[in-house]
Length: 352
Image (cartoon, rainbow, N blue to C red):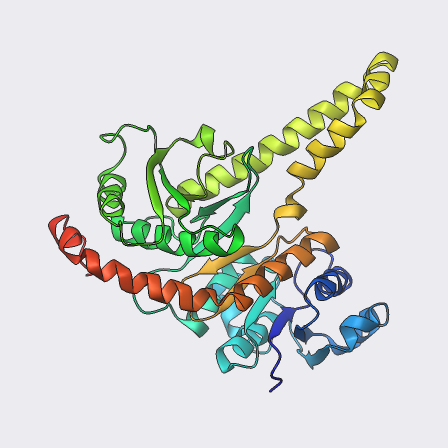
């Protein structure tokens, strides 16, 4: 096995398939020249795509797979496709042949495959899906869980907070990321018992490398008031889809407004720099790459509709997490949670 870190790429995932996956990986390779890649998928298609990216070809090994996990496949069906590009990429991480895997395929199938193959880390009950969201602050915010766990107890929320903070220390270069729990209000008595109990544990977690700053409401997700926002997967997925829909609504509304008349078109020409900045800020490709935190290995989910820039960002996320050894960081922080056993016991949060 190469001494240089390798990332496994599911070349067949995503709406655009091999061409965009290879173009995006090639872009990421320019940013991380020490990386090497294992490319899983149809050998002929991958070779043809690599003809346009000699720099990537020189740093890659192609491993043929004879099946693909379709977007319509249920997780159970995907698990049975042992020789699919997705399954083989995850298997490479399990075997130690790759340090991370990136796929733009079926999210449910990827979650099921990764969890079954890699298992959760010691001290982690459930993995969580975390992603970067744009804000008005100095940096983005990390939000989790975004759909891996529709129901969560207080123990799960505390673990998500610790894992999200570990990710934030890498992504934003912070010593003590600001962590908040998403709630229906900011008062201490608001929310479910699970949320209030998780808040009590996090307030007592002074020894952990995070700063718990209470609750945050959904309308403040993009305010920049938190580096990490924690919630159950049901609420997180609804919030994410709402934010994505709102961003599309705003951009489509502005496009319609600026083309409604000659005066509007002139106004667009004057405001073009500001519009370009808005479009760049809201472009999901600039924040692409959700991470399954809490597994014994790094797995990054690229949006199925991502372009080459979006795929490059997903590969960049995987590379950063490998370079900064996110798994080791989370393991160390999870050990720190055990020091809160007395608080957890008092709140009846001890592991079942």
